Image (spheres, rainbow, N blue to C red):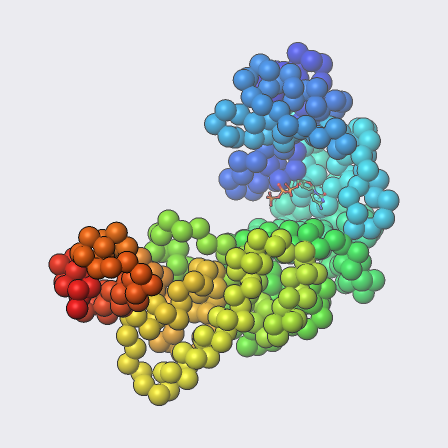
Length: 406
Ligand code: CTP
């Protein structure tokens, strides 16, 4: 249908980039990127009008997003020429031809285009040997300045290599090494760097990519003290296992996998260093507050648990609740991954899968209805009721009411 609208408007329309790459690899990819030779925004508006979709356009970049009523999206770009005025800064955009547009892209495997117009529907355009590199499973840049123009591509190269099971081509590897030596990553803004890191840490199996980042010397750009020491690698690998366990619980809670990996990677950083890393990455305040600001407290708790276990290995549920209550899920999973003792992992697992849902059934109104005089004492009573529920001393509402009146 995209092609039909293109035919009507006399515009050449191509599916492009990751969609075509994954199509040829037989990998599912629902993100369709389309490039129009000419005015992409005009095309997007016309297409949307015929299909009852909404359009969000970016005049500066000559791009638009077509949004279908069910939420599905198509990204529409115009063939364009991007000028990188200085490394690490977003490009300035002008219109140009398809070949020019493709030449501006990161890797040959992302430069394949499929024509969608009626007469040439399905015709593949491959200016830069993308098909051959797909066959040889290589991630290769188009020209020597690629990483200088856009240093975030260093991370993208690693992400594609690891996700697709490809290799970064030898010359491309050398270009990464010289980009790292030239410190081009220092010019990348915090949020862009964070975004690349997040995308890597959200991949299915990010450990390979983390090892690769460390191998290229990329971690110090996040923080000079960040290194993949053997004990950190252990925590990172354990994180994969803990997350796999968590997924098997099929809980409704969303867990941000990248945050757990990020905590694991920063395991040996001091509180100040960890904050500096967050600042370098411009981690948004709401994330810092929700997850990372609990780090010091959580690590303190973990120490306390290990000491407590040395004294006496018997632990009541209410103690576990007390340790973990108030910590975000991501932090709990990180604690499970970094703990040296099997018991700690079991405590986190009990808390996450069961204990954090435990409630007492009486609230303030319930206590008043029992004839108790309202006051600060209610908090103490309710805490005691919760402890009794957690530890199984109270198993039904009747016993709970009896305990409240004691
Ligand atoms: N691109 C680029 N340089 C970047 C980012 C993107 O050249 N720093 C180009 C790539 O050619 C890519 C296209 O823009 O194919 C779209 O980017 P994106 O959606 O990030 O890439 P996908 O290949 O679709 O990746 P993913 O499968 O992770 O969505």
